[in-house]
Amino acid sequence: MTDATTQLEILYPAPSTPVGLAAQPADTFGKGLVAALMAKGYHVTVGTDRTPPAGYALSYLIDVPAGLEVYRVTVFVGGASISRAYFSDPAGAVPAGPWTQRH
Image (cartoon, rainbow, N blue to C red; front, side, top):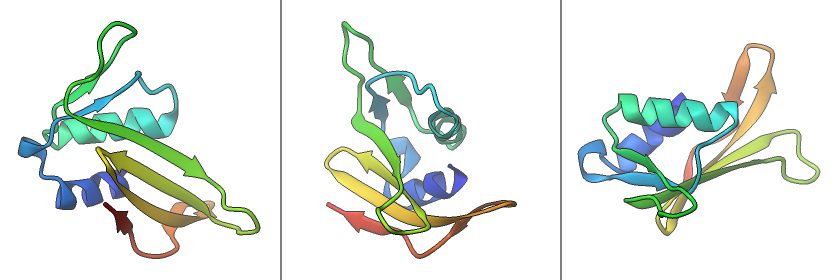
């Protein structure tokens, strides 16, 4: 999550990028991402059943592409996304390549 936060900070400066999640994250990655974004100065809101979140829509997906021994983290901000593959290592996640970005 720190790696994703650092990349988001490069592309979307904290003071000018309010972000919102549709729901409160229940998983470790999501909770860590929200905490790291807030620590960097992002205004993070969470929607409810009655109100949508404010700011750019923020979501994420962690998947394992078929036939590969890596997992991929994709973070969506508004209509754009950033993705990066990682190898699993006993010491933690190891980047398998650079970040990619789609607009």
